[in-house]
Length: 477
Ligand code: ADP
Ligand code: GLC
Image 1 (cartoon, protein in one colour):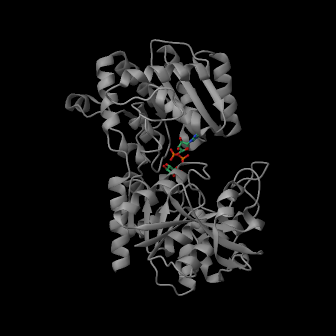
Image 2 (cartoon, protein in one colour):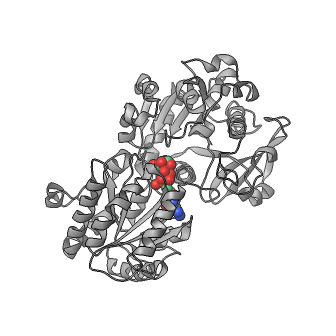
Image 3 (cartoon, helix red, strand yellow):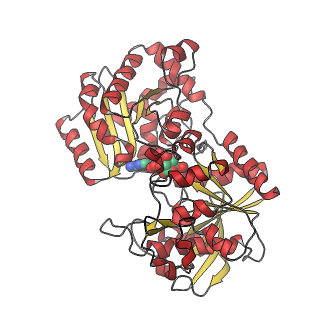
């Protein structure tokens, strides 16, 4: 089976969040099952080297106002199709934001172009390769089903929601510029409170919809989580599946991680202490009785880190420490930097994005905090499980699906892998931190939980098979 993925990010080439990890990992997980995935990605400057090594497979003389071409290249085990369109993608800095931190003014053109190229390839524009199915990821690729339907294509399409908070909503006047007819601005298609929504268009027009965990699939149908699209999701409930994300076990491997000084396994867990020392050094932290918590996250209200600021006194009272790396909302960056100044040695903050450091943190910390208000899947808790870094998570979305709370029954049954809390409030987070410190103080209970966490299956095996059976059902019907 040939499958085309269309997405705006792909690890290790270009990444701002979990979407990239998933796009980089699924093709490799599907290959042994007999599915050949090619990933269509914009040729941002970070991909210049790959473009120079590649072969042109498609020329598009006028794509949203300029010349474009598609270059095929295999890199790091992934078959890439790179959409080179200098007028849209050859820009420095963030792939979504300009130098002032605002969305690029022409994001509707940039990602309509990506979708348009995806639709052409989906409908057989390449000489030697035609997909049996196209999987569009998030709003940046969400116009693929629309362009394909307009071209009369019968190739099935799957729309995957990684985060419904990002919808690609623009004034309805963009329709002409992106080559869509006015009837796309209907309630049944892309109309969204008088404006035009890329994601809604994809959700109403794709053959099937998937999202990245079973709990999030249910939550999406509720007003609290659907972000205005819960009605659309309810209308398409029969076509919606939640398939939980996995992680790339080669990239995230505590036994062999180039960013951690010492490799360790469930059997040699005590060696984790060497990484903890390195991590303490990196953040200027001192030793304490309590656990060393870490956070690796975008700093936004989605991630609930404002609750962590509120719950900080509990953490400090228990003689625990916190190492946090992240970037995002400026007020939050400042608040965590201030916390590090006021509680030097107890709280360490690094503002920025640092892939290598995130590995060291997973390898060295005792626990990882993920207090998200909503979380479609979440990956850092999965990395935590694999590294024996106990996840302390809000009971929502994929966090609810992947962590087994250390309640009495789970402890008795010997199956707990972490701590969950609900509702998602500062008080409940404080209680969860307290509970984690209690568990940590009994090292026998704690190490048993770490070992269990490390054995919990977090690879792609089961989910890759779930994707394949969904894809097969679609291509056979
Ligand atoms: P989201 O995609 O919503 O940001 P996920 O948990 O799915 O959340 O994925 C986040 C990914 O980005 C993980 O791979 C995580 O390790 C990484 N990440 C987030 N912030 C940072 C950071 N400041 N430095 C390094 N990696 C980060
Ligand atoms: C989004 C979600 C996150 C998910 C990731 C990959 O960024 O916020 O929860 O893990 O996509 O699917």
